[in-house]
Amino acid sequence: MPSRVSPSSLVVDIETIPDPELVTTPPAEGGPLPPPVCHQIVAIGVCWLDDRCKLQRIGLVGSGKPEAAMLADFARFLDEREPRLVTWNGRGFDLPVIAARCFRHGVPFRHYYERRELRYRFSCDGHFDLMDYMADFGAARPAKLDVAARAAGMPGKLGVDGSDVARLVAAGRLADVQRYCVTDVVQTTAVYLRLELVRGALDPDAYRRAMHRLLSAAEGDPRCDELVAALDRDRLLLGEPAFDATPAPPLVYVAFAAAAAT
Image 1 (tube, helix red, strand yellow):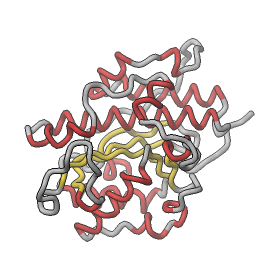
Image 2 (image 1 turned 180 degrees about the horizontal axis):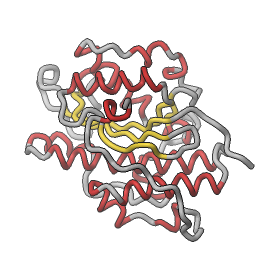
Image 3 (image 1 turned 180 degrees about the vertical axis):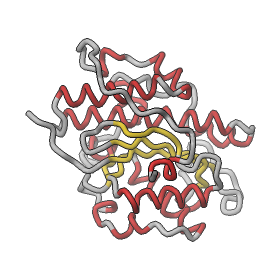
Image 4 (image 1 turned 60 degrees about the vertical axis):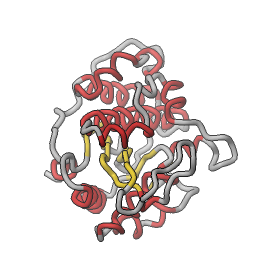
């Protein structure tokens, strides 16, 4: 059975800290998160896949740039490429935060507001929120990414989680946050590929080819060394022996949107 053709996909994960201008009291541990506009974005990790789920690029949007420039790169990429966005709880966190921070900086975010399917919950055409979809849009209890990733064969969290980001940034360890963001977006991509297989959007051969390409990129990225060492390759590839796959493109350590537009 041939794979169904779908739009290109951009798997997205963000890391944030409290905006010191808007959050005057640190959030209580275990308490509710501040509103989206109060989360300052420090990293946007992405995996860009073509219409057959073959990885085209993995990296960070606007790495090393101020938040406003990072957001402008991200918004420009969406305007130019119009991918389907793929997230884990992106409807509840990542996209509202990105939109609110665009509001904070006055960055146009046309793609998000002009495309109805990006904000319509019961469609995965414009925005595929994997967590919401797997929980039947709230009918079942949602899992955490850590659990879903481990179920598919990824290692899950590797000693850092979202609650550590502010501390790491304050200690000058932004590179550790970026590494964590990249590994999270790679694991989200693996969950996405597995879900596309299960729901029939990819047949097993196309799934294995796409997963091989993702693993090849992860193996070539030093930020993913710990992830690669801990993953279950046999489970990710459905117990099939490895085969030659089209190699992933070289990794480019520059602003993602600018590189992708060339």
